[in-house]
Length: 242
Image (cartoon, rainbow, N blue to C red; front, top):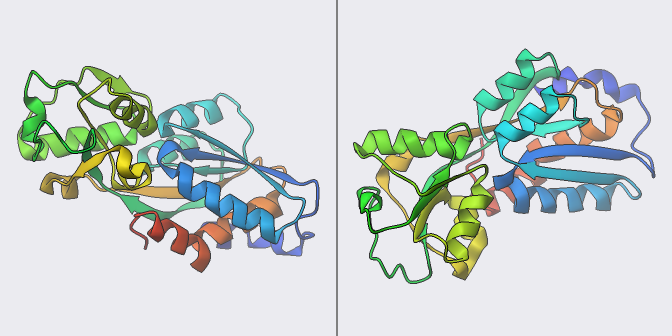
């Protein structure tokens, strides 16, 4: 059962109306793509407001379990989505809508000549990663294990945007982020692909929360995300789509 099927009972409800608001909790790596999708949704539903809240998936899951109100949850890993499922907060079954892989980022030009994951073990380099409980951090650990190296980051960030900020601000020489974040950063970073990333692909599930106040609007937002237009936006941002 997908989210769309699980919420099929909403079809008899009124269409979203002006004044409706839906709150979407989304992984930090979804910032650019979800902002664009929200703009498309609002353009098609005049007067309906989409409130986006971005953070690390583990932080968002903890907030939801603690009682934070939201209508849609999009996580960067199945593990963090499962925490919310286990708490009984999800309506129906989550559906995977995208996947992502890691890349190394450096300052523009890659002056340190980094070409592999093993190069990040150089003690003279300031390397940052996501914390292990965050999907991008778990992926970094899996990739490092695959490469047979041990990373010793000087900082473990709570979201992928934190890693990106440390590198673009010059506080770190290199970091591990998703390919989509490196693409969004443009000329602010140089991306260095590495083969072990294939061993740590993160899948992104989305689900409608059972306590959603505006079920129809939330349902329509998820339909847009998993539909042709939403998947086009995700693909253009560099995500892999089903």
